[in-house]
Amino acid sequence: NAGVTQTPKFQVLKTGQSMTLQCAQDMNHEYMSWYRQDPGMGLRLIHYSVGAGITDQGEVPNGYNVSRSTTEDFPLRLLSAAPSQTSVYFCASSPRDDESDTQYFGPGTRLTVL
Amino acid sequence: GENVEQHPSTLSVQEGDSAVIKCTYSDSASNYFPWYKQELGKRPQLIIDIRSNVGEKKDQRIAVTLNKTAKHFSLHITETQPEDSAVYFCAASRGDYKLSFGAGTTVTVRA
Image 1 (tube, rainbow over the protein chains, first blue to last red):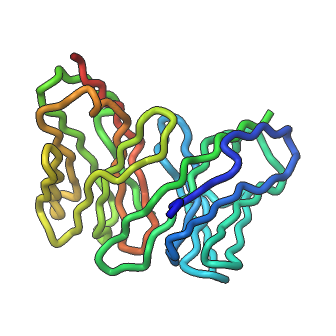
Image 2 (spheres, rainbow over the protein chains, first blue to last red):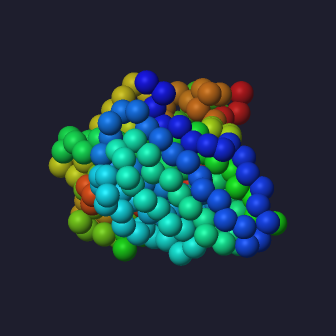
């Protein structure tokens, strides 16, 4: 299994541009989420999904859209990039298991908005 | 929403000594408390977790303790080694898969 994969690894955008960060998992996990990591602030939840066709907002959703058309994929869209969205973005997945909320993180995408 | 505070922000220990990181949480409904280790440029990796029906959990040199009454939990690393140098994050969840993270502790193990 490849686990959780993310593309691209690095991206530079200009203010106002749009782009999609890709996330895929091959573990048949129902739950997927997106976090952003900024220095001194830990990880903050942007959006999450409990299954195909179901998404909801996290702590910092403004400026981002998500969709979940398949179990495997959970892309994050930046509609109009702003410098405040410069960050490292992590996708995570988790099986819906009453015994564990363990989340498995992807390798991250480092985004810079100029 | 949940608020998780983590202390200290940096911690320097001599190799072989113990390291302790403490976190407090605000939501009394939180029932799952994982700890993640993140090496420079890498993804967060789960190292240990604890549920609210357990007071302590150990895995080799790592242990986590939970005080539900006081709403705080701690990570203990014994016999620290250079490879323990990393950023450690605590987190809390209501069991709904939405993790609230602390700000992180940078641990440096001096040889």
